[in-house]
Image 1 (tube, rainbow over the protein chains, first blue to last red):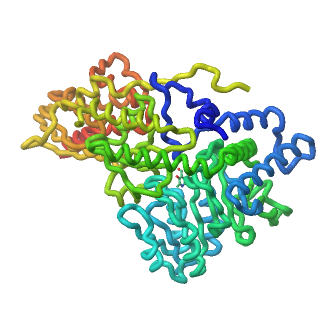
Image 2: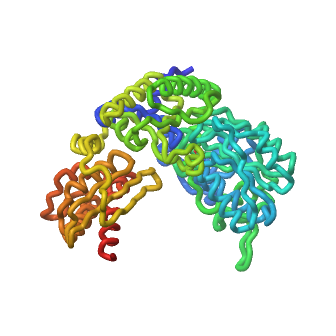
Amino acid sequence: MKTIEDIRRDFPILGLQVNGKPLVYLDSAASSQKPMQVLNAYCGFCESRYANVHRGVHTLAENATADYEDARRLVAEFVKADPRGLVFTRGTTEAINLVAQSYGRKFIKHGQAILLTPMEHHANLVPWQLLAQYTGAELRFWPMTEDGRLDLDGGKKLLDSRVAMVAVTHMSNVLGTINPVREIAEMAHAVGAKVLIDGAQAAPHLPVDIGGIGADFYAFSGHKMCGPTGIGVLWGRPEILEDMDPFMTGGEMIREVWLDHATWAEVPHKFEAGTPPITEAVSLGAAVRYLQQITPEWIAAHDHALTELAWEKLTREPGVTGYGPTDNRGAIVTFNVDGIHPHDLAGLLDREGVAIRAGHHCAQPLMRWLGVQATARASFYLYNTPEEIDRLVDGIRIAKKVLHVV
Amino acid sequence: MEFGSRKRYCTLFDLYSEILLDHYRLPRNKGRLDHPTVTVEGTNPLCGDELTLDLEFEGDRLSRVTFDGKGCAISMASASMLTEILQGKTIAEVEKWIADFRAFIRDGHAPEGVEMGDLTALIGVSKLPVRVKCATLPWMTIEEGVRKYRGS
Ligand SMILES: Cc1ncc(COP(=O)(O)O)c(C=O)c1O
C-alpha cells in the first residue's frame, strides 16, 4: 500500500514552487493533477504504439486499437459497467449533450417533463433547456432542503408519468452534497422515466457502481480523475443506445455508406464519429488503473477525512461561512469570508502558493439559491494533506490582514 | 522518462501591490454627491461588483467625481484611482484617459508617451482574463456617464 508521501511523489507538479511557496493545490474539483503513471502512459503510447484505430491492418494500427479497447474495458470495470455501453466522449459536457440530443430529440416529446435539480452544473442544465425549447417538454426542479440536499419527498411529488427523464448530479461541485442516486433511480423508474447521472465529481472520488445505481446513463470526465483533458465517458444501457440516433456522424461510426444513405456501426462505436482521442483514452485507462491500485475506497476515506477537517477548521475561523451539508459531503468545501470578495481571497491565497477556485463554479442558479454572487471553493483529492489545510487557513488569515478585515 | 527532476517554479505578477491595496483600504472620493449632474451605475454580474459614479460637470469640465459600491479590491481600487485622475479634467481629456486605459489593459503596457501613474498597479490584470472586467468596470461606467452628459 502506498503512503501519502508515495502518492505525492507520483505527481511531479506537486513539487512546484508557486510565487515562492510550495504549491498547495486545492482545485481538483475543477481538474485534477496527473501522476507519472499517466504521463508515462501518454508519452509511451505516442513513442511506441501510436496509430489511428479501427482502420489500418498494420501492426501499429492493431496495437493502438487493442490499447484503445483495453482502456474501454478498464474504465468500464472501474465504474462496474458493461463495456458495450461505454462511449468515449470529450468529457461530461459532451456526454450529456449527446443524451439530450440523441435520446432527447427522438424520445422526449411535447407534454413530457424533464426533472432536474437546482444544484446542477450548467453542463447538466443548459442542454436540457435547449431540448425543452426544441421539443416543448417541460422542465421541473427537484426541491432542496435548507442545508443543500435534495428533498426526496418533495421530488416524489414532481414524479408522475409525464416525467421522461430525471437528470441529477451524483455529487454537487459546489455544495459537496452526495445525492442518493440509487434511490432516485428507483423512484424515476417507478414512473417509467429514464435516469441520467452526472458523475463528473463522483467518479474521481467515490467507488461508483453504475449497475448497482441502476442508472440508464452515467457521464464523467477523465481530467478530474487523474486522466488527461479531452476524454470522458458516457455510459448508457446498450439497448437504449441501440435505439438512439447517432450524435455526430462521419467516419468510424458507420457500417455501410451509399451516396444517399448509411447504416450505423454497433454501439458503442455508433457514437464515436471521427478519429477519437486515442492517446487520451489510453491514458485514461492508465489513470483508472492507478486509482484502482490505490482503491476508490481508500480515496473516498482519505477525501472524507480531509473534508471533515477542512470544514471544521474553516467554519471555526471568524467571518467564514460554509455552504452545504455538514456531513456526508464530497471532497469540496465552498465558503465565503466576510468582507473579502472571493476573487480577492483566491488572488491573495495564490500569493501564498495556495490554489483555490473562486466564482460561480458553472452553477449560477445555485449561487442565486444560496443568495451569493460568488464563492470560494477548496477541493481535495488523494494527494492532499492535513498540513495543506493549515496552509489554507493561514492564507485566509493573511488575506484578512492584507485587506484590513478583522 | 524522468519527470519532476527539474527545479521548477512559477510566479505571477503580484496584483495586490501596496499601491492597489492603499486605494482599496483608503479609497479616494468614496461616497455620494448631493447634486450630481449625472449618476451612472455599472455592474459586473459574474462576480457581483456594483458601482455607482456621481459626476458633476461644469461646462465641458468634470469638476467632481465620486464612487460608491461594493466589489473586489481590483474594481474598487480602479474606481478610486479613476476619481483621483479624472477629477477636474475636460471631457476631451476624460475621453482620452478612457481610451488610454483600454489600450493599457489590452496591450499590457502604457500607450506611447502616456504616464499611467498609480494605474500601473493594475497592469497584472491584462494577463488574467477573469479580472480584466473588474479593472475596467469603473472606466466603462464613466464612459457611459460622459455619453449621458453629452446626450443631455
Ligand atoms: C458536476 C459537474 N458536471 C459537469 C462538469 C463538466 O465537466 P467537463 O467540463 O469536463 O465537461 C463538471 C466540471 O466542471 C462538474 O463538476
